[in-house]
Amino acid sequence: MAHSVDDKIRGERDAYVSESEKPRWGWWLCGAGFVAAIILVTSLLSPYVRHQWALSLFRQNTRYTELAFNHPAALPVTAIRGKGVHVSFSITNDDSSPIFYRYVIASGSGTKLRSLSSSSKTVVSGAVWRVDKVIVPKCSKTICRVQVSLPRQGEKIDYILSLKSGERTQKKQ
Image (cartoon, rainbow, N blue to C red):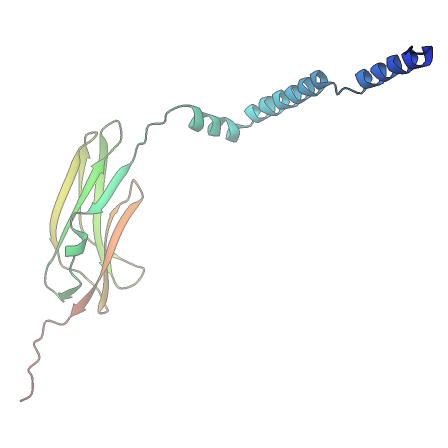
């Protein structure tokens, strides 16, 4: 069976059409790479994005101060007005250098607190300063907040206690 000239031309035309319809992946990949490069360069011009890149790619030292009650479950819930209350807390320096700490223990019934005790000390890197104090809360109402703060570091911890009067009440018989 012989092929005609028309079949041969039709076959060449089909081959030409299928080759011209092939997607040009090289151009698409080059264009996508160019767009990605522009986005990357533009993002590196922003200080916020550079900061995020630095946080993501490089290990960051975590420097912080830890302020915590030593035994939070043992904190008093009630106290007698005018009597001392034991407060025990720790200040941990997890920075890479010594830090000067000043703590303030204060109490009050509202948003305004009155300072009861304070002290200061330089704590070396990785060290813990343990503080045990007996304070007498000064509160105008029966609900009293006792707060320990590190003003320079902006750290605060507190707890609430209920003050009872120091007078004894006798039961009627």
